Amino acid sequence: MSRPLLMALHSSSETFGVAVQDPLLPQEGPRVAVFDDGRALSNTLIGRVAALLPQERWSDLEGLAVATGPGGFTGTRLSVVMARTLAQQLNCRLIGVSSYALMAARLVEQLPPEQRRSPFWIQRELPRRGWVAGCYQRVDGRIEEIRAPHLLPPGQRVEPVLAAEEDVAADVERLLALLGQAHSLGTAAPWQPVLPLYPTSPVGPV
Image 1: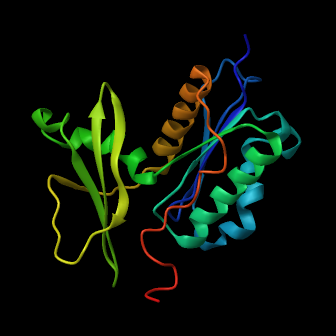
Image 2: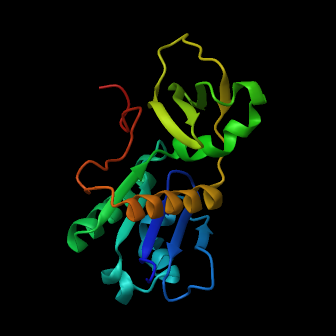
């Protein structure tokens, strides 16, 4: 039985990542590419995706996954909108996972062994805004998001806490693996609930 054609997108940082599971290349693992496009992504997005999966094959996609943030307002929105549009038009599965939840699978290994099954936090400081943090726990080998990334109230401290660290290549490959699991299990994944995650207003206080 042929593997499905699946694609994952990650643009929650200055680096854009794409991962593809291609049934036409069964001897290979996932194809992963990252591009340091920064704010130029609005002009390069389509071309970067097409570099891994030509546009004439997009209609064959059976599932998509996208990192929902937190990240840059424009960058995160671009890949989420693209994934939602394709999933809607193709009537295929779409899953959204926060970039912190993807990191958590890597960063949990930084904790002492006795703490790796307990809840922990990942956080990053936003200049002039404060700290954005999310809470995670490893359960039966998978990461559960207990609290989605959000802006902490001034003065609030969370423990144990790990600093957010980008590794887009690893995280977009993990995102593709999560999509593969959802597809194999037949998990319902409509496109409508998948939205960008903005812990702070992109226009500041209103």
